[in-house]
Image (cartoon, one colour):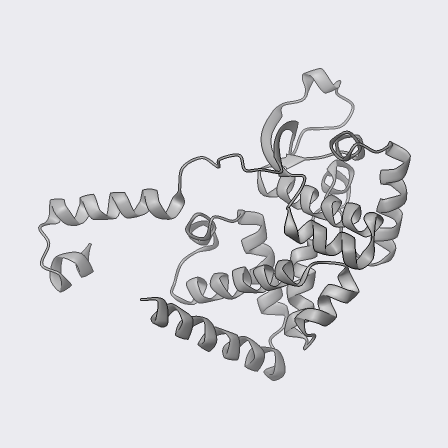
Length: 243
């Protein structure tokens, strides 16, 4: 308000109207369903075990079952199983970001495979060091770092996009997007915004913002910070060029 009134000489009511419009633009309207996405009712986070499915409080989530080109790149490079496992990681993260907790049965139904197949995928992913925020893990041992945060940690530690894509069976464009979102979170956080404010500004989940901030705190050595500062400079330069 102060900037609009003093810097641009807007009347208070005009400045207030501009901020109201900006809030709508930045926070957006309710998510629209895109190609490859499906709406699904899942158990709400925090619901206790032992209840019948019918008695559980539900949350409607928007799940990206097929991310299009990104999924096709993984399929061509690493095969169908790797693509399915990447989808499992993505669906679990999206559920958590929208306040839900998915089960292995939910995933099997959505990916059109058996529960046995999902269990095998879980064992392989966990052996590879992935945290799987399914209903059992969330209610039992608490949250760990999602695969997006782990990928950003690899990048901060010096791995290239290609190396990360190879080690995690992700498309390079996905890795680049996770890093870009991380850099945006750090940039906005340094401007004094809270995690709760960063999430709607960037249109990503609050839990993911918090994960990124934890990764930022954990990678505080000079090499990691130098890599981050370099990326921030490039990001800010691109913003100025766009303006």
